[in-house]
Image (cartoon, rainbow, N blue to C red; front, side, top):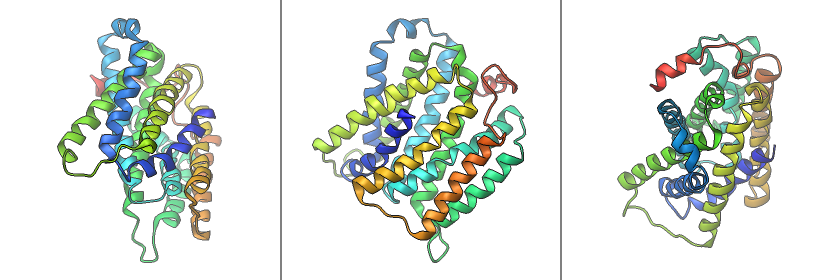
Length: 294
């Protein structure tokens, strides 16, 4: 729950930061710093990590890169509150992606959750002309990427040292963001590394990335992903709260209804038997993911 609060506060913090620093450059520093901080204490574990562990960590790192690339760029075009609730739809996408990759069909609750969440997304992001906000569409890609991360983590986290696996994820995500920053942003966008941006990097790198993903990786070795996903539904709630407290954002009446539908869809998908995966030792065939990773 504490991790979801940290992730929730990062929405307004990052939104303010990327108004002064390009998004890929910000995430490059964030993830490289997080990976270096964790890697410094994980050198022995990294040396013991198998080739399979490196491949699994790399695939998870690509999923993290996709999630944060979509989210950070999307935050430039939508509100922190909207981004938080749209990101939370990963809880609904997770059982669907699990069904495709692991061939475990979602139940009626997961399907109903998708319908509710899709209706909520429409209420939240469609304008009067029924055209979705560009930023909300980008953040929807973030939700799909995070769903892929949870599916992979549920299948692989119990097989490898959590510190080493997390460090590989963060370093791969940082390297990909660095590549994108060099290709798309270097010398083309204004950069203002002031105290607020430095503080945002520190909070997101050390707390929201290194510590939070280490906790998630370690926890999913012992806690079924269904329970994990239920806890993570608090992230958009905290995002909305901190968006109000820090940025003064306010939702319209239609937006509140949309957020309520998204939260209802998340809870229906999880509490009524539509969990994203069984416990790490349960049903499903994680070897299908190994084929994708190797």
